[in-house]
Amino acid sequence: MHLPPLYRQLQAQLSQWFEPKDKRHLQGVCEAVAAILQSQSACMSRWIPYLSHRDCSARAHLERLSYLVYNESISPQRFYQPLLRHVLQAFEHQRVTLTLDTSVLWDQFCLVEVCLVWGGRSLTLSQQVLRHASATVGFEQYQPVLAAAREVLPAGCTVTLLADRGFEHGALLRWLKQHDWHWFIRVKTDLQVTLPSQRTLSVSDLLPPKGEVYLFHQVTVLGDIEAHLATADDTAAREAWAVLSDQPTSLHTFERYGQRFGGIEPHFKDYKSAAFDLLDSGLRDDKALSCLLMLLDCASLIALLLGVMLVLFGQRSKLDWHSQRGLSFLQLGLRELARLLYQHLALPQLIPLPTYSPPPACASKKKQRQLDCRIEFDRITRFSG
Image (cartoon, rainbow, N blue to C red; front, side, top):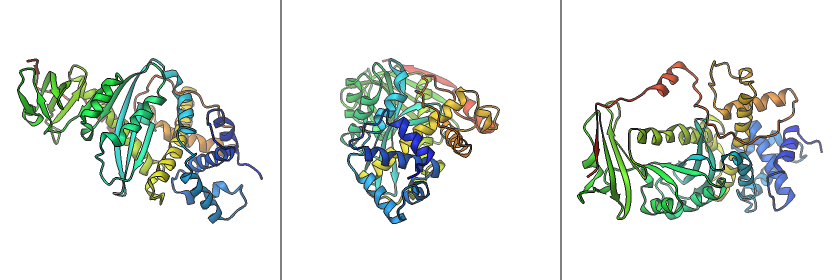
């Protein structure tokens, strides 16, 4: 049979890093990734036109794809992680920022991900879909995701983890300390905090007046965990903020935690509406969804690298009309792939990701002003005793 160019080229490149149990698994994964990149959809029925090199019916295609996503041998350990290690090889002994977050699908499943913040977006290090209707999950449920992320990181990385209010778990903070990870976690107002004076108050009692910041050093939370607390109440914000960290607090505490918003939330949007329409997939099984998301992550990583290479080689203006980068690397990569296929050009050799993280894309002057906006406070009060 005549093999489509993208599938043929992906198989040639990805076979360098993928570690399939069976060569047919490699073929199936490469076909699926090529179909995702061309259809820009997580719905398997929309992949069928890109599988027409196999002379079989649409129902037979869907049966093969169903077998693929339910096959336990199609795992991140065999496919996504080896590709990720190639992409991240330059990050050895570098500082990296990770996000831990969840997203609920159809009020039935909870997607838990640990991602690397890079270039104004996030790229998945590890993920798992749980049959769980809430975004709040226990440490024992997401600990394997943390362990998988730690396993795939290059040696010697200095890690900082960012997480939202649902993760103020003592078991998580002890795990982070055990593995020498730094952390910034937003906490709920009912968290009990013991000050150096041995007074114990809830976070709600430690919030400042409007327009002010309180910085508390050397507090104790969740029984025996030593930390630092920063609280702020910006006049333009809907609610006060409280961020707990293992690092001494300052105004930069909120800046560091704020990197989470530019990373993980656009990443989830790429899954759902901005790129792949995950909610149209039709799958309602946690294991099958985890496999499908792994295939989406492979496709996203390839597209991201194509976008990065387009910028590094000074060819961004071919596809992005903004004076500065106005498209995410993922969107640039998807458009570059379409251009290559249209002009019958070869897919370039995929290079490792550079450690330098470019600023986020800005599609308008209004968005640029929002990113450049600096919040000012009337008073900063530090408490050390």
